[in-house]
Length: 336
Image 1 (tube, rainbow, N blue to C red):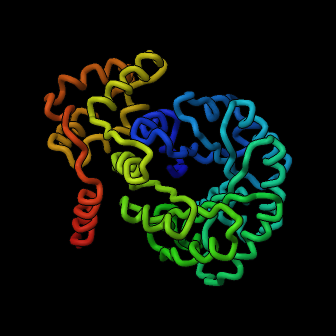
Image 2: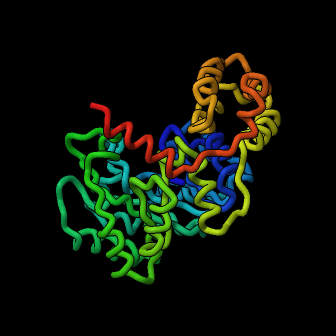
Image 3: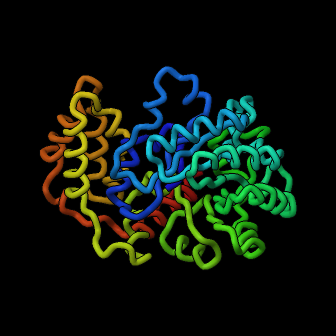
């Protein structure tokens, strides 16, 4: 499950874990500066034990700072670290980290080596290249240089990062996908773990990519349709069961009750729109979610959910994810 800034917080990750017992979860991108100089670094680092396996994604451009931040991640019990070399936002560029680091592979290698001092395994998430450059040799040189620091794990968003003229949202859509380049990386560097990211929306797509690479990272498709994660678990033989809306809600109720008043309803329920995706009653569910307010705890809000929708909704089976996503894609393509 991909790291997504402002979305994959600890509450979101707990919720997604209910659909995918074995998948690897990633935190939102956290800057080293926020951990070292912020008032409350714990708010970025605390997580539930149920979230394991969990990777802390860090961003920065100073080896010393990254080493300190990595040590903090190790102290909190993360299973690994990931260096962000893919974010194209202007704010990130101003800090000289994110995707712009692809232009300085030697610095990336230094950052990875500094993070590895924590004792945790380190991976790198990056793009194919910068702006309109289309030079596979530059990409291969980047991977080869960083791998020289004993980094054996690369997660490749199969698009370029256009640093000029596109905002982060457009950077996730407009630069063309080139999956073949990621497949070629795996063929050229068979000793490395190469995973693919970008535009993956179905179980057949996941299985197709796994014929060429070692792993698949999914972001927005799984956030909006978390049943995709459960379907992937079954297709990969990692689970022989399917969650129901009722089972998900019960776990969430237990989670919210344990948090008590420290978890206001909006902080949790903002992630739950996809729970009803494709189910009869989805619109009613969305209207119910809109009634969440900060004066109410998530536990109290979820306790009302049982009565907000009929039993048939809670006991329904999630629809076939591929069909749902294909229908959604057709609606998008038909929109002028």
